[in-house]
Amino acid sequence: MSDKINKEDGVQSDKETSNKKCIFCQIAKREIISEIVHESDNFIAIKDINPVAEGHMLVIPKKHFVTLLDIPNKLGNEMLEFCKKVSFELLEKKLGDGFNLVMNNLEPAGQFVMHAHIHIIPRKEDDRIRFLVRV
Ligand code: 5GP
Ligand code: ZN
Image (cartoon, rainbow, N blue to C red; front, side, top):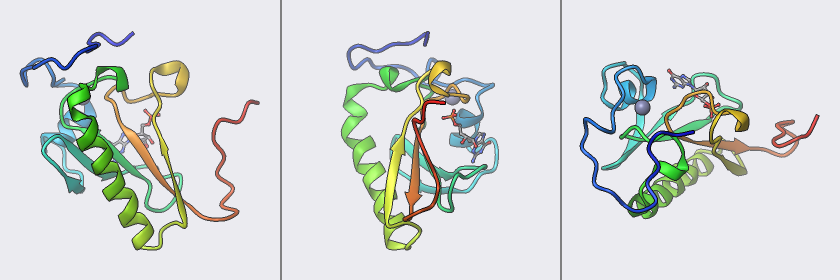
């Protein structure tokens, strides 16, 4: 289970909310070179290294939160606005005629990188991408 669950908006220091070994923390701090496509006060958007579709983006909080449950509510509006901006641009660039927002929370739900992130995946008719299929 995630070690920091914020049921309320807590003020946390950078020290508490950054993890030296975490790849997304390192990208957010520009310790690892990765093209940051969009940036706001608390979020970045990068291209997924292993895209499901062209334009597949990851929206990542700059601070180290593990799952959605750890992200303070006070960042909710900024996160939504940021996701809308990234999604709108994907449509504008004609990378998709639709899009999915997907968030895997904890390992049983398919979370591999334990730093919260939202996938934004452009979709086209008959692109053969399938989510949530029981096998
Ligand atoms: P998860 O299954 O945790 O929701 O997905 C993690 C995503 O992060 C995967 O789609 C994977 O391709 C992507 N990813 C993992 N490491 C890196 C990286 O170093 N750079 C980028 N751009 N994407 C990464
Ligand atoms: Zn992190």
